[in-house]
Image: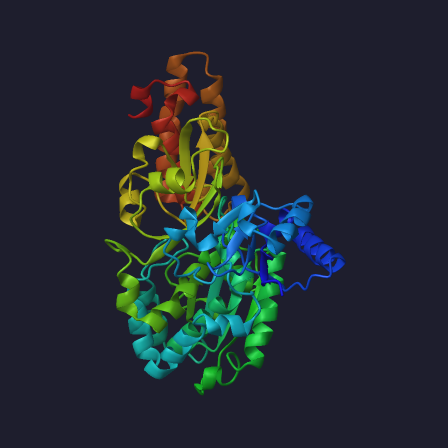
Length: 520
């Protein structure tokens, strides 16, 4: 009897041939009369090795990758002889340095369980947090979230427990839980990985939140570009509902909570919580002025707990293991772990979950292996398309909310896009302003007008015939960045200044500027 085989059904793995590899395995094993138990799992997030095939062994799961259909005959031969002798054999997957040194809390089941198997989920600690929350009651559950130090993982890093207590204390006949899974930042994929690979974790987190704050209904707002995540979530909701984890009597608690998936229409601005609420209500996604805050007057005018997906997915572990367990990870006020996502010109792109405090250099060079091109590193953009460009001279900065704020940057959703020395930073600054102009909801003047004027200023700067002309335009651009940062209604306009100002400061030569003028 052959050992069990495991192959990810993650959409990235499928994009690079995992489905074709699966068909070839089944077909060719059948031709050889080999009994084959092939299970489609979530992904480990070691994306440069996908499709990554794993097999059970006495040493744990042994990996082969990245595989193509052409490799299948030799892999089947190896499985009948000495697997370690195959040229694509990786040894025990858990011992790979990239994975072994991680601290996986959110992604503890990644690559191990089948996404839609309740049996697998429960066998690896699933629903222990919900059981504990029911036993503790709503007030103590909210206190556990507060005491854990969990902060919003969507970028703002607001203390989650304060939101929970605010919504819980609000008086209303109807309250809502809203999960912001509109993962629109470049280089980010943790939300998608979790929705496709471990959907019951999000369901459990939202159910805990609902019974804690007194909300009876929830919405998962997913971007339309994630069709596999949407389909997986909807099937998982049906399974959870049939098993009694959703509905009129959640987990035997006597409390009601149910939820549904809503699909966005592709607007980046709907990643902002109030624009998202407008979209959920069937309106155009336009930012709302605050106050009132959504915790008091949110969806349909009712108290609403709005969280990023990773925030809600952190809750089951906090309840299962206790707040002290969770806050032992991290540094300063940045507690717990963060799934950092490596993308761009990077040798080993993928997901790295570590406690706050490792440096950007460790992430990019030790885990990422430097640039895929082999050229020198020029910068890493951290925090999405509106994140600052961080030069290698600042790569020793700890990945911590406050430490990054101190250098004029932000962690955002944990996306890190790496660039080599061939990238033109003036072009990237122009792109940030153009992106803002196209994605602006148009409600406030700095964002609506300032972004368009910014594109024009950069064009004039780059076309200026002499140094004086470039210096003049650079001063106008920096003044415009200040207006965007401090005058915009929401983070879209406010954060557009980050990539522009950081590019000007650290890479003045790309704009035809001298360092002294760029740093004024």
